[in-house]
Amino acid sequence: MGNDARPDRATRGRRRRAAVGAVIGGCALVAASVTPAAAHGGASGRAERYVALGDSYTSGPLIPRQVDADCARSDHNYPSIVAARRAAAGLRDVSCSGATTEDMWRTQGTNGPQLDALRRDTDLVTVQIGGNDVGFGSIIATCARLGAQDPAGDPCRRFYGSSGVDELTVTVARTAPKVDQVLRAVRARAPHARVLVVGYPDLLPDDGGGCFPSVPFAAKDFPYLRDTEKRLNLMLRLVAAVNGARYVDTYGPTRGHDMCEAPADRWIEPLQPASPAAPAHPNARGEQAMADAVLRTLGEGRGRR
Image (cartoon, rainbow, N blue to C red; front, side, top):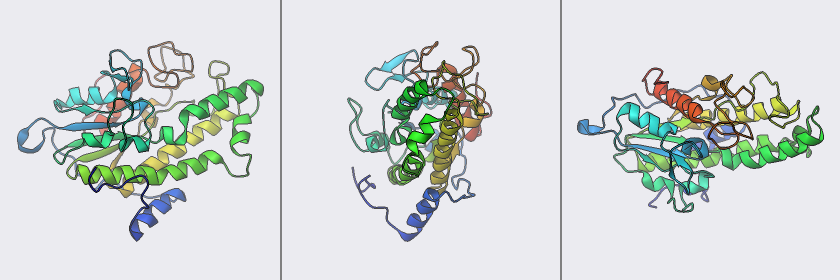
């Protein structure tokens, strides 16, 4: 594993501690990537070497065609679409369902440590991680269970705030140093690569409305959960800036296509999917939308629909 930062090491350097501390404290940073855009090809005109790191929002569980059953990885996820659009023959997609930041360094089922896919001559890296560190799955299960007991109220918000401090806000803040360590390790292993941190798409109505019982959260918990996701995405944006990486906004482009929309309009499936996708995950159109967002960030225009 070389000399990469490990999840169990303290963050070193006064400046880095201050910068990450600002993210944890919710301080706004206005920063852009220090990594300039480059042409499609890698060095000497060779095919671009692209590595995709991430969790199930990257891997695309249940979206045909599944090419890795252990990681629930689709060949129509956004890394595959981006690679095809950019003719990146060297794609290494090691995204895996259930991945946390710790799985960047450790084996997950048959998937080796994701960081091991990186090389010094890697040209492009996308990273979408943090949702499982925050606990997407357990949050959804908890809020659905509580919502059934009080459909008009906000039992989920009250549950996570029962100590007087919102537990999910704290968890997002505690995830910031973990994502920071991942990005530091990416830079160490792929020092010449463009690094893109991919945010999470719009899961629930941006206007705070609900759709119980299709999505079985209590009416007043929809805006609470929407704001929690926005907090996560803001954290990812700020940590990306601290590390000189580009942030890819997938929330804005998917607004209005959340899991409460009709099947023909939604890009995120509800807890009982109507299209091939995992519950509360992007379907094929959602993966395409995220690919389009990545391509726009790389200067490729809208991508292909």
